Amino acid sequence: MINKVVENAIVATADIPDNATLMLGGFGLCGIPENSISALLKKGVKGLTCISNNAGVDDFGIGLLLKTRQVRKMISSYVGENAEFERQLLSGELEVELIPQGTLAERIRAGGAGIPAFYTPAGVGTEVALGKETRTFDGKVYLLENWLRADFSIVKAWRGDTAGNLVYKGTARNFNPMMAAAGKITIAEVEELVPLGELDPNQIHTPGIYVQRVFKGTGYEKRIEQRTTR
Image (tube, rainbow, N blue to C red; front, side, top):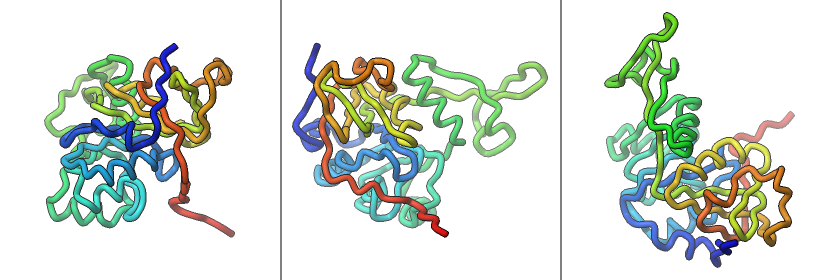
């Protein structure tokens, strides 16, 4: 079995060029690849197209890359927590494609499954449908949506082994698994890196066949996006 372990995020992301298309896993601030985002920040790579459910917050997650103008385009579903994102959007500095959350998830899943397009009722009759093909099935109008794929998918898992098999925890499982399958090169950072054979095969969420590089991350903040107390 191939050992896919690399030393750290700097090594894992070293060949990501300017103008690359990236998928960045996570849901809100949960399960985001913190180490890899920091490495991209230091690398200074520019002109990125970032596919992510959200755009982080101003001083964390993808928000850090937005602040340094390293992102050219965002393809996302929810961006309401990032004031810098809003400013760049309204000023025309950032290209944005907003997609219904279920459609975004399915477009990514389709990319990983090799399905180039599918029909969905989400977005029919709205700006989402502008310029897109529609068809009627059983009396209901559906919208044609294309798959999403990326040059690099960067995901974060709870546990991983040396062959790249991954296990996610909780909400981190929302977008990370489907993104792992939809990248030409998938980079996985994990909280715990274990020897091959230690993970229960029945509990693996992303098989190592989808992962090209894996490393043990450090110093995770795991911020809470909106803390609610009583």
